[in-house]
Every structure is written in C-alpha cells, then in structure tokens.
Length: 438
Image 1 (tube, helix red, strand yellow):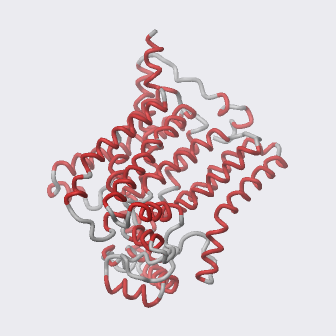
Image 2 (cartoon, rainbow, N blue to C red):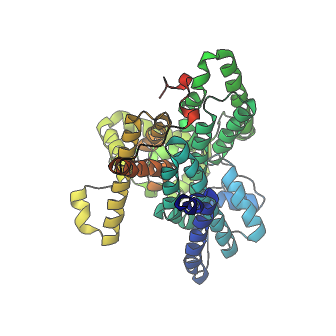
C-alpha cells in the first residue's frame, strides 16, 4: 500500500507539470520589471540573437547580429532558435512585452520538459530512486529556473536537447532497429541546428551506442551509415546556404575566431571589446564584413597564443576553474569583498560540482555501463569553453547529468547504510556483448 501511494510522485508527467507550474509562478513575479520599463532595444532578447531575429522578422534575412546595425548576412548562429524568436516577433511585435513574455514562457516549457529525459537517464543508468529524486530536484533547481526566465537565449533548449540525446543513446545502445537509428541521426541533426556545441560529444556517444554490434560489423556499418546520412541531410541545407552566401565552406558557425580572440588577445583580456558592445570593433566588423573580420581575429588570437604560451595556459586554467566552481579570482581575495548571497551561491555550486564528481567516481567504481557515457559528456563537452571563454550558462547543458551523478553520490552511501542493495542493472545495459566496453 505504501509503495502504491508513492507511485504518483514517481510519474515523469507529473514532475514535468510541477516544474512548469513552478517556472510560470516565478515568471509571473518576474514580469513586473518588463512592464514597468519600456523596451528600447534588444538587450532583453539575447543581444546578437535578438538582432538576427529582428532582421528576419523585418524581411531583411538572416543577418545583422551587432545590435541592430545593418551589416549583411551572418553565420554566427545556426537557424532554429533565431527563426523561432523571429516568428514570435512577427506575430507579437519585435522587442515587445508580449514577445518577451511568450519567449520566456516557452523557455519555461523547455526547462520543465528536461525533467523527462532526466528521469529516463536516472532510471536507465541507476534506479527509480535516483531518477525520481533528480527529476524532482530539477523542478526547483535554481539555475534551471534562472536561465529560463532571465536569458532570452537557447540555453534552456540546449540543456533539454543534451538530456534528450543522452537518454536516446542509453535507449539505443545495442539496438539493430533501423528506424531507431534514423531517429537518432535526426536528433543529432536537429541538435546541430540548435547549437553546434552539442556535437562535441557526438563521436563518443555514437560509438558507445553502436559498440555492442561490433561483432556484426556489416549490420553496424549499415546502421551507422543510415544514421549519418540523416544527420548530414539535416545540416546540409544550412551548409549550402553558407557556401552560397559567403563563398566558403562553413558547416555550421563562423564565430570561433572572435570568441577565441576575446580572451586571447592581451595579457589582460577584456570581453567588453565584443563588437556587439564596443563601437570601434563594431564599425570594423561592419566595414570588413563578417568572414574577413573573423579570419583576422583568429590570426590575432593564434599569434597571441604562440607568443604568450604561459599566459594562454594560465587563461585556460582560469576558465577551467570558473567553469566548474564559478570562481574567477583567488578565493582569498574574492571572499571578503562579495555579499553573502554570492558566497552562498559559490558554496552551493562548489558543493554541487564535488557531489557530481563523487557520484561519477562511485558509478564508475560500481561498473555501471551507463557511467562511461555520462562521465565522458561531462569531460568532453566543456573543452571548447576552456579554449575560448567560460560562463556557468555554457556549462548549464550538462547540469542535468551532473545532477543525476550528484543524487547518485548521496543515495549510494545511504542505500548501503540502510542495508539495501543497489537496484539491478537494466537488462538492456548488461547484455554480454556490451560488458567489455564500459
């Protein structure tokens, strides 16, 4: 009887609805600031992202990312999110209060739906207790609520898609169903059109998913080709568009040179020099046009790294620490100068990161087959941000996986103290053919 009473709280659908209700309630109290002040430009709409969406909505095409200054076509973004925002602008008005409210409500939905793949990952990789606990924590997870409400960007959608991709990989592993592999390729193709950063983990997850079929090399090759062709078909139209517009092979995005240069151009890097905010750089960007400007920034960043290797290495270390601990300065210098709420946030983030690391180590130690792909995503995904620049919102897409590991870290010793064995490994994750690749 007791177990029956607990089942409703273990419903993924109920958890999603609760998460959406919490976010809508927070949105209700958060919208006053938008009602009380007129919206004069695109600052509340993701800056460059909002500018591109405004350009699309006004009929000028996919371009002009630098704060409403006409500058021609761009490949700084891939198309899905800018076009989504542009559609809202077209219906409800560019930079209007109604558009602001709608896009934030949509982001709340993305954030709430992330509970579903979190639940699937936790159940598939560990057990129902981990799945339910992690999903319910996400309902009230501060970062998940904050980024849905405060950032008109693709952050919440990228986090949702990362969790969906990982859950799909766990489900797909070892399957020889062609339709599943077709869908898997499509998921990655759509992900690439949402944010190419997701592709950083594609090689490892795809290899892990196909690995059990290595003993049937012919079938594995066919399934890989089918999935790969669907993926290429998804990204090909955008790549062709870029080639036609810029006369250069640009598979997805063009902005690596700028992102690399912003924190690798002097021994005192200054991100305020971004052309979206700094008028001289903006004028230079408009004058040179996008691709020559990006090429120049890449050359300057490359030269700085070659001539200042020690400084470049120190910057990478700082970005690594900031990614995981949210500390950009020496704790000894930082701690006495910041308010109490920032101290609480730093301590909470450090605790969360350490619990996630501990959970990953415990999962690997227990030889859970699902521990390898989850841990690999945590290791691989942030690598590019160590090279360019880091913020907590760039790490956020893997926070859902960190949460599953953090819950695992807490429940693992508790289950031992209570004298209970861990839940049996899911049958599909412990087939004999798969045990050699963990």
